[in-house]
Image 1: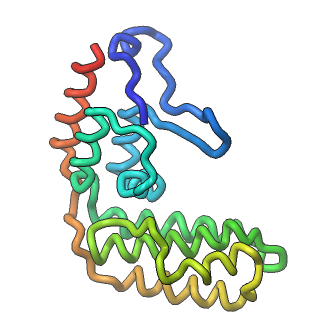
Image 2: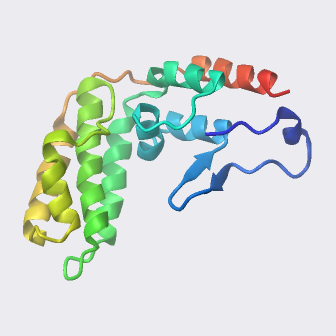
Length: 183
């Protein structure tokens, strides 16, 4: 996540909402876009808030991490299940992309942990070896699909500890503070 200078928003050409790099598979969101995605329960963004892999934490970043529960809502139930379902629909059972299949299962596991415990599971722990076997294509498609179906059903039926709505007011206060700080 990065914060664009506040004055950059006063121009006709707005600052970027995201940046690629500098290394392959690295990506950063501008703070406002990040907050909007997190409020919408975007799985990737929510998982970033709980990731143990952090390179630099600025004072604004620390405030964001301290605020992470404010982004949570029951919308995550639908978003995690929906993202996994979208990945499933794009998979060809005849020639599955195993990395994508592994991420689909990991997403369901993370969403299930989130609705039950109030935080996504970014460490796969006990599922690590099985997920890696899927990624390597060592697990038959029927077994992957059966695990997906079972996790999807479990996620759909799981009671949740998440609040009905995120705390938009706290997130808005944070964003205004960042904009003032970068003025």
